[in-house]
Length: 219
Image (cartoon, rainbow, N blue to C red):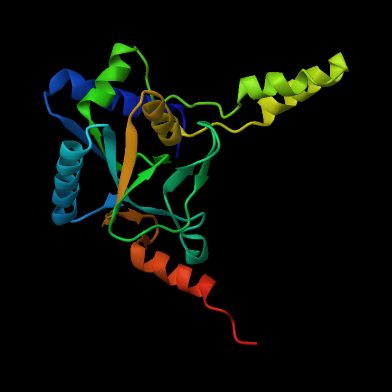
């Protein structure tokens, strides 16, 4: 579960990678992700070819799936996000083109290959990029409350907005900061990692859920 300790642990992993290796990229795979060696080899090959053709791409991730409850395949969705109107807005993608490389705003850190330059940039900035990022757009908040005449009302709105705001988890916070540093983030939808909960969440279950929701019930 996302939290300060997970953000700290991912940061320590990156620090160890930068200090103890000279590798061109770091492949992060969470312990609840399942993939065959062929999937991992394909992931590395796609990363290499993508970087050769598009050096502005800093991350190539695979696809995985999430469900609010592992038993409920009707709410299974891919863990990829598309950009909104500004950098702090992202929305969950519910469909995607099969077996292709797509640019995304973010995805979970559970199976992503990251170029060394991306991580070194954060080290040079002395930043742990996984620390949770508040989704409050403070400039938008300031502009909004400036239109209110009542000083007490302005204070109440500001306090409530900040208190009720969610934060990005460590994965979306990381992707937000990567994009802010000028890198592109991609996901190859043909590289699928199964997500191990009480059952494996996989593409077959996702396709079945989509079929159920797009097939009209007989009247």
